Image 1 (spheres, rainbow, N blue to C red):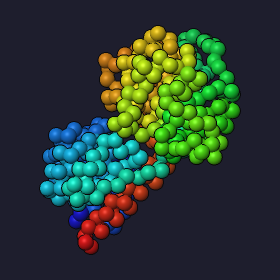
Image 2: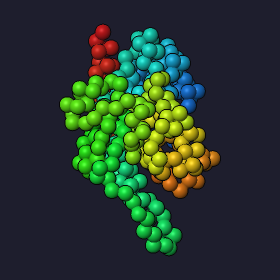
Image 3: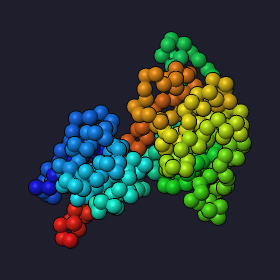
Image 4: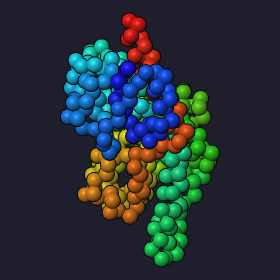
Length: 315
């Protein structure tokens, strides 16, 4: 039998669907007890016992990878698109192949991004809270048509988000150093540069990957350049935003409101001031989570891990 460690919560919830496939492959799959992610200490204890690892948002750090390689670990796959928690260099140095599952969630995350834009524009969250409290609020929102969105990131999620925003007759200005102005223009959008793009944006929507170079890209300095009343949406990674700076801007009303699916520390702590600000929509890092997307991503993760283990066995 091949022992597999599974630490991805969405896949774990659908695990019974894949039990037949696991049996066909001769996999004995272990799911440890945990909530959102496992600690590095727990992973150091667990990973060396397994031939393969389907990684969630856990810290696949150099320490974890090295002890895994010194044990049984022969291959791994990061379930999903985001890979900022994976030390690819450590995997390469240890001779353990690792992959991810790109292009899986573009439409699903874009749906949530658009939903957040609409909610912030029309204050639907405020109406919901007011009616639940026994009121009958009628806040005046803003129309989407003609408004400018600074879209940060033009990968699969960004491109799908741009289509949805454009369908609402919004002006989409794309900022992504990996996409040339020509490529953005060919797709039918305008190209802009960070952070100057904030000066004309009614909304800023983050759909980019987290790198060492863009951590805290929305901070006091970049926010000082924004158009008053900016609305912020983040469906990418929490550390793209310096939350302390965002909280200050919300309190000063420089930022009119925000919708966050992700945070600097997850789950969101009870002490975080974002919980107490009325113009904030709080998500739970769940934008990609549909039954359909989880199923196809899990199938792809199984396929990629099996291929790596099979190559290793033949090699």
